[in-house]
Image: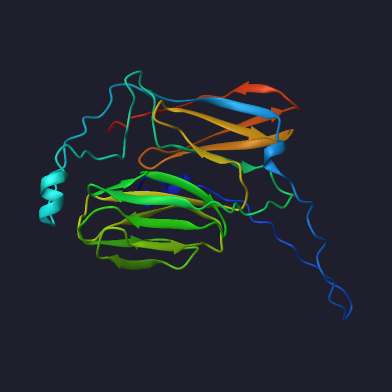
Length: 253
C-alpha cells in the first residue's frame, strides 16, 4: 500500500474551509465563482523519468480460481511500470495548490475500473468528488472489490459473475488508496479523489498533460512505490510549459 512508502510525503489535497461568525446571525458563505476547465488555455506537459537500473519485475503465479490460472499467465506486478525509454507509467500528476477560490462542476461521465483476466484495468485512476466510479467484472469468475479508503467509507463487495457492475462515489477528497481482491491477492489498483479537475495519469508512454487557467501552482507527481515529488510553476494565458519529474530506485545504505 502507498502508506508504507509515502508516509512521510503523503499526497495532500486542498480543502476549502468556509467559516463565518456574527452576533446571533448565521451568514451563508458566498458562493465561489464557477470555472469551466474546458476554457483553460495554459498547457503544462512533460514526462516522468526513471533514473538508474529498473527493478526486475518477476511474473506473478496466478491462482485462486481455475479461470485465473488459465488466463493469468504473464501477469507482472504493476507497482513499477517502465517504458523502453525509461519513463514511468501510472503516476498521478495533479495540482496540489493554486486552484482554490473557484467551484468546479462534477463530471457526468463515470470513470470505469474493470477486471480483465484477473487484473484491474486501469491500475491507477483519478476522479472528482461525487463523480461516479463504475466497477465492472469482465471475467467469468468471482471477484471481490475491497477498497481501503480512509477519508471516505471503506467498501468490500462481491462481483460473482461476468458483467456485474457497481457504482460508487466519494464525498471527500482523498489521497490515492488501494483497491484489491481478497481472493486474488496480486490484483490491485489505486484511486485518487480530488475536489477539482486538474489531475491526470502518466500514460502508456510515461507522458502527461494538464490544461490550467493562468496562475501559480504547486504540482505533485505521486507514484505508489517511490512517493511524491513536487514543483512550483507559474503559467500565463496560452502559455506552454514543459515540466518533467524523475524517480529512482531507492538503495539501502
